[in-house]
Length: 254
Image 1 (cartoon, helix red, strand yellow):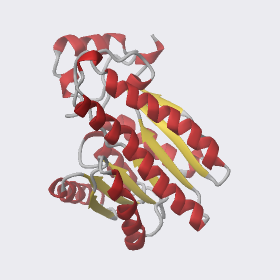
Image 2: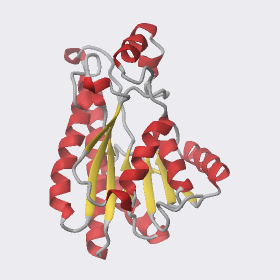
Image 3: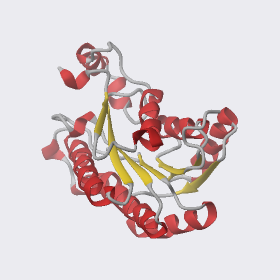
Image 4: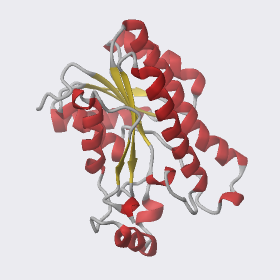
């Protein structure tokens, strides 16, 4: 086990599969105490068991519905009381219930996308940042956006809007919190092979289009994103603030 995150307490939302589980696993390998959060308690327990077995790390879990904004302050307060002040927050949980032209989205799908992808991360960030400010500690907040937040996002337009909002939120909070030693940065993954992205990866035509445009000649794996998250969570990035770290194999340079 390495020690780049030794002594840090990290909360990772959407941490029971895909990118979130890869980040939580990498954090545990680097010596952090990791709290995995996701909506379903059974999934949380299973992920905690897998990560503990894989890393031997100090891993815990909490059921958390990121879209339930009213519950977030209480959950964060309870986690701090049980585990100590959270040093690192990774806002990874996301929702994308509408796949199709933007003008055909219904309002319930619109509202769910914004609640989970924007309001939830903001509520978590505010709760964790306030705890850091009150305790006089420094910390790192890592938001997981998408290349769909920096480019046109046909058939994923509402999702893309929320991911663009995360980038804007990151930049402003980086300015407002940076003087207190709280870094806020964002990762913008390209297409990554996960269940969440299966609508894209399981379409031969869409998949071929992504691979052809990507300089690396492949789509990403969750571990590709985890390495970037470790860097932004660690003290190696103490002079990085408000940055959008694109991890897309070169998709966005064409």
